[in-house]
Length: 130
Image (cartoon, rainbow, N blue to C red):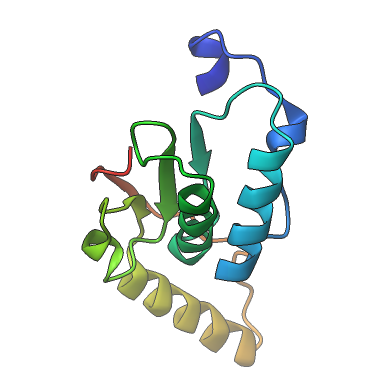
């Protein structure tokens, strides 16, 4: 929806699945940068750790963050702000997630029904990587 609002065409080739680690982020970003027919302007990653791998690939490509390409992570790890370009990220309520998951597990253990998903508010933490 955001792409449509800004008249940007969705390029399915720029969507990568299965990036769960820093190494995955590095490999996927490297492939995207190598095969990119239309210049990438931003990367949004599954997690801050995946973003760290993508940052390495972007730096190896001699691109500047955020001047040439913006990077956004997800989960606001403690050292996200310590990078050369502090990482813009989506902050999640980690403590609340833990409490809710434990409550769901307790219900399941005693045979009570519980919802199969958890929806909590998040916050965009804007820093210098975007």
